[in-house]
Length: 261
View 1 (cartoon, rainbow, N blue to C red):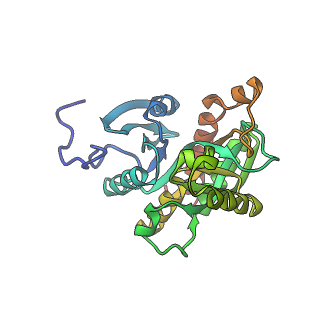
View 2 (view 1 turned 60 degrees about the vertical axis):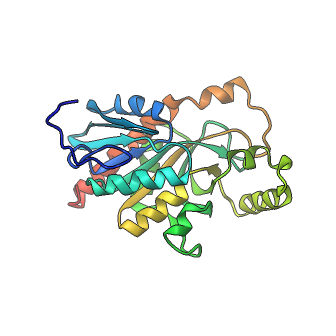
């Protein structure tokens, strides 16, 4: 990185103003940043620190970025807070999730219109009665973009949780009955998938007055039954990342038409 870059970097993400675009993808895994950035024009690595890795490039002439958040709501909230401070205002969570409906096969995509606040971070921002809702324009663009590439897309509610193993191995937990009863309730309400960041991102976005949405690869089965080799192969990032980028391209076009971009 050039020594001429600004030195007033954010504490955790180590990014300074001018180094990111207004549109930012938010994967959890730092290993997904470069594959996303390679779908940009002229991508460059901006910063790497802890779980946070940031790349910036261009899509259709618009400056865009990708920053990893690590696993879970606390670190995701930090990433969004610091990205807003350096000029970002539109965020797309992109990653993997677990299926919650028998009708959704592994490898389908979920566009997350809202999230169940089954986590603790968002309660430090707004009372639990406040809904974690995605921006409608971001949601619409993600669905249109993904479907334009032939993806099977489900628009709906996710469960944002704090415990990976509380979902995958609830029976061994001392609070097993509570976990299982709540899982059944989320399913009965039509939740499409389970993940670990969307609720906090949507609540932080509401608090800061910025936009957020999410597109997720849905994997696994609602009852934890094993996946076939074919189902596993459908979960390739090649079936998620281009679709997410197509969604952002759609959003950029919509924003330009509305005089926002």
